[in-house]
Length: 151
Ligand code: ADP
Ligand code: MG
Image 1 (cartoon, rainbow, N blue to C red):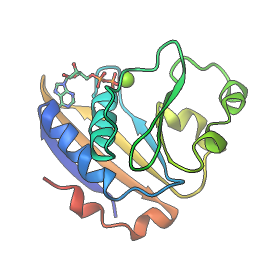
Image 2 (spheres, protein in one colour):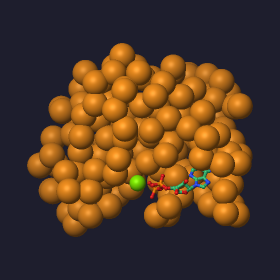
Image 3 (spheres, rainbow, N blue to C red):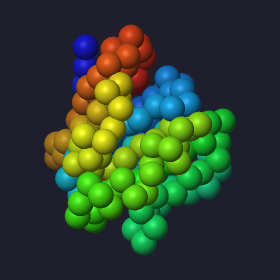
Image 4 (cartoon, helix red, strand yellow):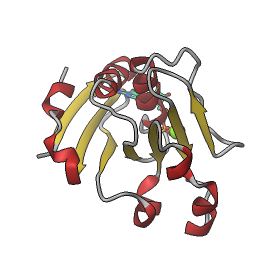
C-alpha cells in the first residue's frame, strides 16, 4: 500500500527523506515526480543526509547525473532536459548505480528502462510551504515498511 505524508516546510520534507534512507539498499531505484519547485531536490537532499553524504546536493543541471559517496553510494539524476529515452540509456544509469541507490527526478519519463521493482515518489504543492508526498511501491517495494516514513 502507498503512503501519503503532508510536509509543512522543507525541513519536514528532508526529515522524511532521512527516514527513507534507512529503508534503502544497494541497487534500489527511486523515481521522483512533481512540478518544478515541488521539492524533489530538497527531498533527495534529506535522503543524502540519511545516507551520510557530507556534500551539499544541488540540481545536476549541467551534468545530468552525479554520484555521492555515503554509507551507500547515491546517484542523483535529473532527466528533465532529456529529449529521448536513448539519451538516458546512454547515461547507463542503472549500471552506474548498481552498487548504490539511484534517485531520478522526472524519472517516470524513462520508466520503461527502469527495473520492475522501484519506488515512485510524487510531490504535490499544497500551499506555499506545504507539500504532499505520496509513496507508491512497485514490485518488492511492497514488502518495505513505508509507514515508518511518517513523521
Ligand atoms: P524541485 O527539485 O522539485 O524543482 P526544489 O527542491 O529544488 O524543487 O525546490 C523546492 C522549493 O520549495 C525550495 O525553495 C524549498 O525551500 C521550497 N519549499 C517550501 N516548502 C517546501 C516543502 N514542504 N518541501 C520542500 N520544499 C519546500
Ligand atoms: Mg530539482
